[in-house]
Length: 136
Ligand code: CMP
Image (spheres, rainbow, N blue to C red):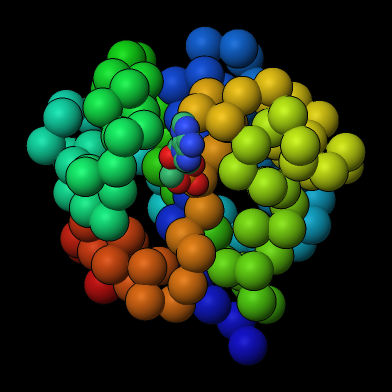
């Protein structure tokens, strides 16, 4: 079933010049770019995006990181796009993510892990509504 997912190319991806490399992987897989946004978010937007994590110990440094510079938000669509993006992204912690995945090939960090992808259809709907209110 064709579906949409929300992807973030986090500030480390922009700083390290990996935007093209990462977009190429999604495009080569056959996913379509439906919408893009580029800019720097504030703490309130970070809190809204990561609402389920705001009470976690790892969240304050994560918020500092995701507000530290510009990033790219994308809506990608395609067959099973939510699961396909999560497979391409790899495990959260770049140190243990499988080689061949974006994080496994390009990240050595549990926090600065380059990308975010919606983890379920419910998350995708909520996150797309937050980042791209005109699209829903
Ligand atoms: P993401 O897929 O955007 O979802 C939540 C983010 O929190 C995750 O990627 C990482 O950037 C970060 N994260 C999750 N767990 C940890 C952790 N234990 N330590 C530091 N950062 C984490």
